[in-house]
Length: 363
Image 1 (cartoon, one colour):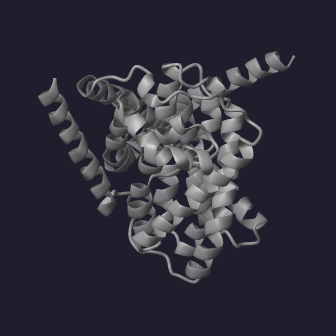
Image 2 (cartoon, helix red, strand yellow; image 1 turned 60 degrees about the vertical axis):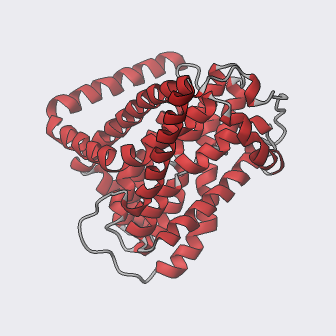
């Protein structure tokens, strides 16, 4: 009976989507254009280099090299095998999907099982430092240092989340990364660029879909109506505009951060700590897409995002609210831009060019 009801519910949803696309195509098109702006101005410049780097590390002997200095961190802090050190590092550097792509590669090569990768995702997903420093720190709170503060809170929240959700889980003894048929540098680089390109297209596709959905909901007045109700539930602590920012960010994090740039920083202090760690339904779809059809446990993934968001909120929101609760709204149109955080991407590109030159010279 449940299966039949689920099928009818799915059919009704598809019919509603077709109706919206037929009669509200201008709104959907506007949302897609807004999503394209986010992809070209932020997502691709700040994320694409890190996707290439994470794939390259996972495919070559660099993964084994990282086990030396970072393997102890993985074992002592996260209580997981040393072989997961590259995935942890890439999640720190590249943000949401970078660590997931390393884990997906390990599943594809048979190093990890689907269940082990799902457990590792509980602590290998967070917003990247470049995005936090340039877009959130400088764009919302007026200083890059606040982005670093949020980054530290996210790392601690991820550690707590992993400890709780992986408690009692028995990891297999994983062999070192260097024994898993690693590719030579030249082949690894070519494969990494190809894989990262496909991954970037998938990420941008999710951003466009959820940007269109957000624009449709906003155009129908639903986001404003739900935002007003949510604001009343909080006793006015969260303004209607802040509530709309929260609801938008739950669907697509880039759109939520864009709206946050036009809010008083105090409202951003209430909304962003949870949003940045929850990551949005768009990012959750991106994470699942990294693994293809044999994706991780969806329930565990969503629980980890909610718990991670709660921990980050408890760590960061009191400090940010105390500092910015009386600050005025930033003036001007909210615009996402990489800003100075693009330096990390530039350094990453330079490193990859060096790797390519070395690989060509050696083979």
